[in-house]
Length: 309
Image (cartoon, rainbow, N blue to C red; front, side, top):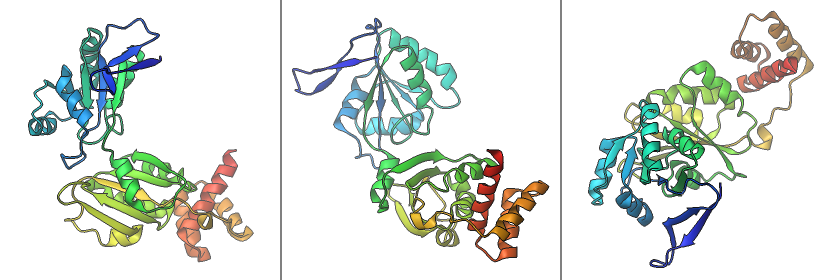
């Protein structure tokens, strides 16, 4: 689909209502606005976002109570409807019907931009498939805010969001990122923070990270250091709120150079036995050969992948 955006003759800027579909025949539908809202400080919202929230027919909110506070703060009286991961499959068809009948709907998440690690993507995808206009109203983003103050010199960054809950799956995902040269951004919940950081240290090594807690809020905290250093200083008081982590990418110096033939042979022997996990083999090799666990782990992965080819 291609949208033509016309100028608003009144305010001299692009108008949401001036956005027209130049191909599809579904011209009577409303627009689904994907609206970014503050990640903490209520002042971090655009004038356009406020205008859209005031003029749409309905706001689909991940947390109605949370969004109501924002609306009350800015005098927004638009009807709020609950839309979250537990009711998305029931609510989405209802919203699609309203959009098709010509109503405009704004979708908002608890904080930041909808469609990024939240249920907004489900409704957005349905709207796109139904050839309903979807318009972004950009603004706050925890990902961009975190990377902007990380200070890491990178060629870009990779956003991963939340890692899997189960440790086995989480470690497998981290294994895929061992050689990633770009900075990596993760979201994490407080109850999983320590275990996630421990896995990160085991798989990616004791890298430099920036850990941001409660960004833009009263108790905002930015902690910089190496993973193990940060884990050692974590206290119950500090493991509260939502976390965003920026992990330094793998530098050229950190790329594995390969271990000696004796070590490789021992790894091959243990892999062939199929009695131990990669992690257990790495620990064993590390102790036997007096090499860093991380290097042993990388070599084990390389040997296993060679067998899979």
